[in-house]
Image 1 (cartoon, one colour):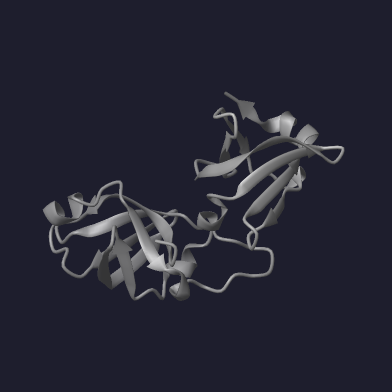
Image 2 (cartoon, rainbow, N blue to C red):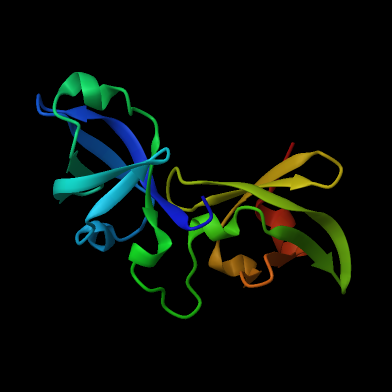
Amino acid sequence: MDDFIPIGEIIKSRGLKGELKIKPATNNINRLKGLKAVWIDTVPFDIVSSNAAQPFVYFKLSGIDNRSQADIFKNKLIWIKKEDADPLEDGDFYIADLVGCVFEAEESGLVLLKGKVIEIHQHGAADVFEIELDTGKKFMFPFLNRLNLKIDIANKRISADRRLLDEVAVYG
């Protein structure tokens, strides 16, 4: 689904008419207001109505008319076409674009760690990168401004200073 981006995860149903409660994957839920359609798995749905109550968004989708039908979609991701997303500001990127990027941690110009971004976790104050190293081991670190990450989405590369990374990374 390269032409799609996830906008959130369906937490549960709400009400008797099958409304979906969504935990958004954006820091600005206003970006979701003008949407007309979404996808769950590969199935398109028109948005009948939507509303937001920070930190959640609620969608009533066509064809989902009761709680039982809505409950089927619990814990699934909800997607939109990239072309329907708000344009990004310079230096911004979609989380989905980070997954799959090559990750390198350097010190004095030498690459000391190399791997791939396999997941971005969103659980609190900072998003957390999960990296799988070429050795098969994994580690995680929070996305913090002080890490001064170099993110090159066009070339699918992310690099960090190993010394700064070691201050916050959790190695497994």
